[in-house]
Image 1 (cartoon, one colour):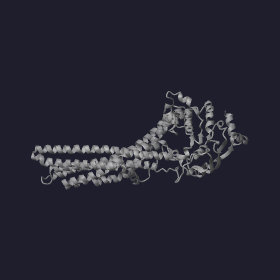
Image 2 (spheres, helix red, strand yellow):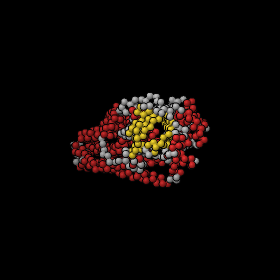
Image 3 (tube, helix red, strand yellow):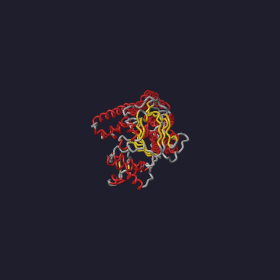
Image 4 (spheres, helix red, strand yellow):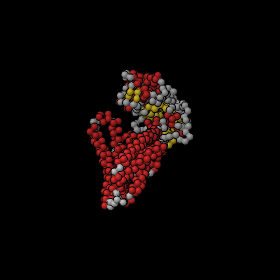
Length: 591
């Protein structure tokens, strides 16, 4: 699908929907008390600051002409006090809102991560990891300030405008209308650019997502890149993506710059008109120098909230693009989940039944069709066949990583679609083809599926799969720190640690997907002893391309042509001289 390409933009055509901000209010309402306190502090600070021009007017028109030095000192001290108090209140408010903003970030990011944990494999199959990561980290950071400070500041700037209008109309009505004359021009500019501005910032969101996705992919695959000398070509791709991001950013920035540019020029023109009209009509009774100075100060103060509101609008436009992506992720359906009334699966014996199972990753393109078979408790089953035939799909369906297209899968006679995922998967040991190692110690990695396991249990599991010897060769032994994906370990060592992790969970149903593919022949022979013990009493499904590793399984199923083409023991299938016989003979000749 196109969306799993790092350089394919996501849809930009969805119109702005106010529901995004209504949903965001859920996070804001949790912090309504500190936000209300912050708003009151801000309003008080603004009201105190607005008294300064009135003090200045009185000093210019009354105190200075009267040459009253005592009064001048008193008014000066009062003006200084208004500034100090205003700054103190604003600082307290800033600290409160910083805390609120971080709380909102925490809540959104926690909800995102929790939802991502529940999403099915298909969601991750369709998207690069980088495009998911940027939503949890960058986008949440980008919207947090808008959802905290932005809401309060928007209301506060509106209140400021009302306060300023009241103060300036109280000083002089004629000059007040001159200040207001620039508003229609400004609103016209905003209306002209709003749609283009929003689309420009959506484009920035897309280009940033593409760049992040390719960067993450490149870092994960750096070994392959260097192996095939792709550095120069990859630098070219990165340069193109970075260039696309820069171009989109600069285009969006032009719209952002246009707004403060318009405000600054309108403010300058209005202030000039105040001085022009005021000086031309200078009158000791109605138009004094103090009035002109006070009104010019109010003019600057009036257009400052306008500029602030325009900046908030810019941030709002940016946040909309990010909120769309965040809520798009939160709205992604959890298609594989517990159905209403799902029951916990009791301890199982391990009988597995496929009843007319059909499955397709994409509608109309069946991978498996009408498969039926029954595996007895404790039976070991090998799945063999050509690459892409559906072997891994079969075991993924047993684990219910995907929903069936048709049919049923039963464990001990219970339909797995009607039982809880946790109770199902807690009784299964799954070692997938990709042996993922988490950052942390080797002990932590083996203990990952059973956090309460003792150190002795961990060591016993490692010994059973022949991992104990190489682990003890490290200076820190089981406490050796390994990086993400186990970069300090060989691929074979990573598989052995993963195998120990699976064994420690003591599953009733065991799934091994190419479990020994990266282990040398000598280690594999040693491991086979541990495997034989591990398989006793457990139902097991083993996927392996090397047929020598599955000869002793109770049953071998050859997966091909969307179903089970052959089934039987090794000797039975060899005697049948069919698909399995040809595959086995070909491997023996290659060896």
